Image 1: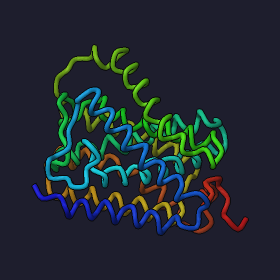
Image 2: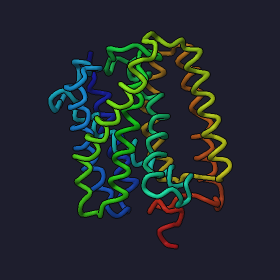
Image 3: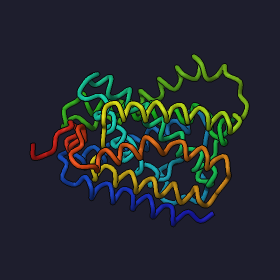
Image 4: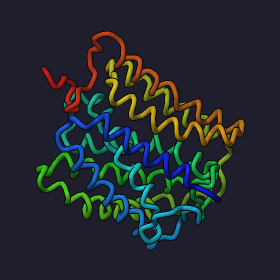
Length: 282
């Protein structure tokens, strides 16, 4: 399987994210440390648990993990953190921000994973929705939560701690969730209709929260998400399974509302480039 066009897309997504956020202080430092943390976290999870594996067509691997996969992680984590800041409006502290960032990444990963698996980018050895077990989706959110907490709590000069802290947090919480709950659930494929219904309910709650807070992403955040979304939309179009298309459609409403409220004139609560709800010039 030839994956080099998709690998180039990974590079493009990182490039677009970097260009759109180039004026933010500390963006390069956070992106660089998150790439390293993602490599450490994924590789140690693959070695420790053996739940999934990447397709053999990937190039530039660091042990078991394609290097270019790790370049997607900063856009996923930092974009979710920006939305979490919008919804929390300064409340909740570092713990609240980390928890909500993790939940938002779980929501995003619930779409990313099935589309990627259907496209043959990687495979799981446990059953679930569209070939993805719940623990696979949860892992994204746990890593994001750990990363967001470290980046929020430590001084900028110490942000490299995320390379150690985020993978350790991911392992501990994965083990706790697996042995505390997921290991004991029925281990059989989930019918697509239940997956669509569950995501539709989550999407409705997400939409209601965005609407209630009149949260709107500014253009640089929206464009960065559009770039990543376009990548997965292309993959989805290549595998037009009816249930998977219905599943993907359920993710659209809250993201459309975030974009609409952010691009409309003078949104009440659009996040600024510093992520606080203020513009850089304010």
